Amino acid sequence: MNPFFEQVYSVVESIPYGKVVSYGRIAKALGRPMAAREVGWAMRCCPEHLPWHRVVMADGSIAASAYADKRKALLTDESVDFLPDGRVNMASCEWSVN
Image 1 (cartoon, rainbow, N blue to C red):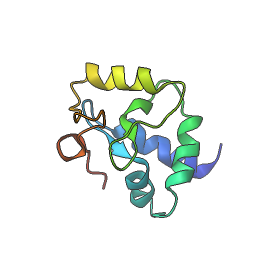
Image 2 (tube, helix red, strand yellow):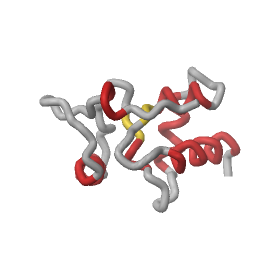
Image 3 (tube, rainbow, N blue to C red):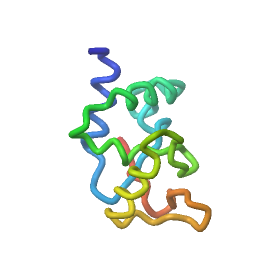
Image 4 (cartoon, one colour):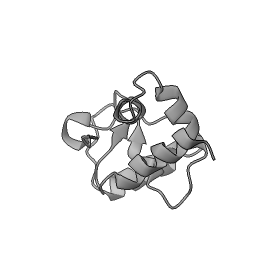
């Protein structure tokens, strides 16, 4: 497996229940601030046992995919706060990655 992907999955595994983090924040936390798209590629292959649904776009949007509705439902089940336009309220739900 790609070593960067493994690092991404390690961060994703640590995202707490009810919190979200953006692709870019994960990239920055891993010392590669320009690698948000690579984080996105890693998430396309993310093992199912990880909380993949907790990774969103920087503005709180849920990435358009076949799983967008499922992702929103899982986040709703975790009481993640959404803005009226359907984006995650990053101000109240963003997890601070070290």
